[in-house]
Image 1 (cartoon, rainbow, N blue to C red):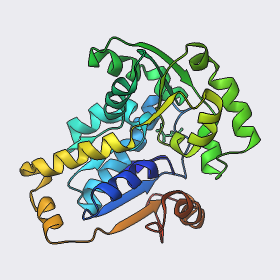
Image 2 (image 1 turned 45 degrees about the vertical axis):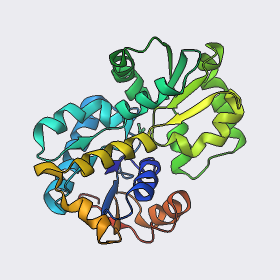
Image 3 (image 1 turned 60 degrees about the horizontal axis):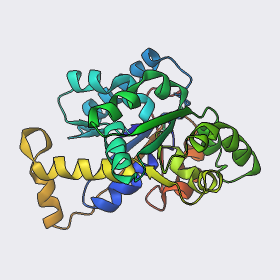
Image 4 (image 1 turned 180 degrees about the horizontal axis):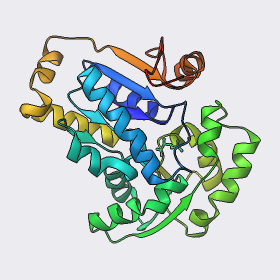
Length: 269
Ligand code: DGL
């Protein structure tokens, strides 16, 4: 799986917990984060490079695009180009969102790139659910997470400003449409109120991965199911295109002890 940085670790946590027998290779493209302000074409280029590297050099049997911006920019292209099943985070998140709402007033927050792409508007419409969607871009949130700042006064002040549209719309379910945002969940909940359900795409994405693996088939390989049966303990490798020391330190705080070491990405300086 890959993300622009630490955000995909929210998905990694769910996957490791749900599928402890699977081997995981995680790429955090911290050398080029944030993806959100970049053009979708540029993000698609990064996504193709990293996905190609994971398939070619790590022989992955399944790829998770653990980044909403990269999912919006490149999911269809990656699916067309690569020989393995590819799971994005947008559709799983939207499934959870429409299940979570009772009033039908839902919100999505994400990066500028994700919001501008229209991917969430399309994905919500595709569910056919009768919901009113309010969507807001939250530039700056990702940078706070990458610095390890998750509940400071500055986060709260920015959140109060950026979340105003979803508060005004009186949503009862808010999808964190950027994989970095669950790390800010306490601050976001303080701002929107405890009565608003915060929805993350991480668990639903992990369920989708499990279903694909359990389904087996020529691409995913039924050996994966066998691994559980033989108590294989999954290995976890973390690769960063930025400062690997920072990646290991902050990553271990955010993910947990599985992130014991980090390796440099081959394309990093
Ligand atoms: N985690 C990425 C996402 O889900 C953050 C993108 C960024 O680097 O701005 O969109």
